[in-house]
Image (cartoon, rainbow, N blue to C red; front, side, top):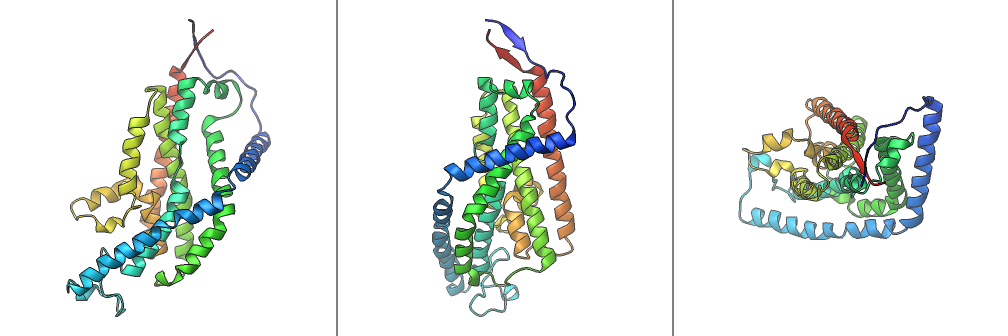
Length: 303
């Protein structure tokens, strides 16, 4: 058995127009493929909203129990006689609206099979094709994920619209002001990029440890609870909430939903957006450094 170390061969520089054509071709191919074999997007998306029915009944029972047991904070009332109870700053209808918005946020930031796919390519030697062709692995995967999300929402927009129309009464304050909505869109985009580069960074660990499934399981476990996907982070005990709020995980689900619902004070919103952008830059750098160092030590086995 022979061992061959790989390094990126010398290639003539490609102009920016050539790169744009290359990335455009990759995007169009990936987008077409996903539309072709993901015809179940619409039905699958609609089915994913079914658990919200359980959540509505669950939280209704919790709020109703608190209300009838007289555990009501008069100073925390919304002024709405039908909803005098608030938990973590959320009334019943706001809590349901929060779950709906986190579903949108998670649809942007979730990256199924990204980290495990990178580790698999490293383990099985498929990574070699990115070392001998003028295609950047990270850029290629990012374009594919963008195509995946565009295809998903192009098909799933109708089920989303139907569910949100049926649940419109749960949005107490209606549609947010323009500046707040733009901040929400920006948080979704940055949440998508943070999710991508964070999981890609985990996948790069495959250059050092060929199996990352255990590490990925721990990440998914913490992310599920600490991203705000299960409940608003304001429900956490006071002693742990500041620590969780410092983590980047909240920008994957909680933060976009809280921005849309106006739960982030206006004077704190610019700083929170800046922190989210800082986490994005951090994971971009980590991902790039890990890839560069991993390629430098990578070896392919075989004749």
